[in-house]
Length: 230
Image: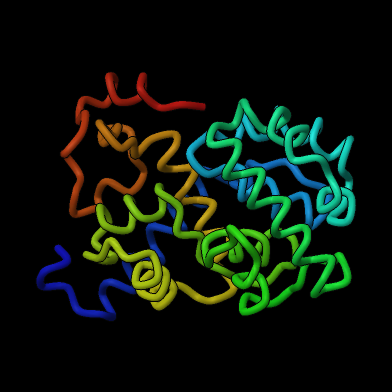
């Protein structure tokens, strides 16, 4: 399909896919718990190489002790490491969240900036993390190029690249800017619940008829439906 597909046809198909995923996942949302931009920023950094569930079990303990950037910047690193240990790579994550907290205090008055160019100057914060924060804490549309979005963008024939920036640009060009944040959530939900990395549940996929990779996974409708996660 993508090989001989015109840019207009690809755009139309991508928007049909997004509409179909909106029907399948009407409650798609950021699955990291947060009550402020700072909490979301820290939670997103901690989510690397672990699950959102694990992060959501850890952050209430962290934020109860260190509720803002000033508190976390002044923390004892060993105490932070002990809290973050369940998330994996806890020493590096401690350096990142304390470093970004110190940068927020020193350069932004302790507040999380609402611009991508400022966010990506913070330790441990790249475009993916910045777009999560902008889209979900500030309402500024962004494409989140996490592992699911990267995988599904290739499977759906939106891109052939493994470069997150290229995928962000190519996926963003297919969808209205206002839909970027929610489209990212829907792709993430689909990747976690149906379009799995090892064996997707193709027979239970709402966009199989629009997907050039349809059939690479389980095609039996009954077996596929049993694979789908709630």
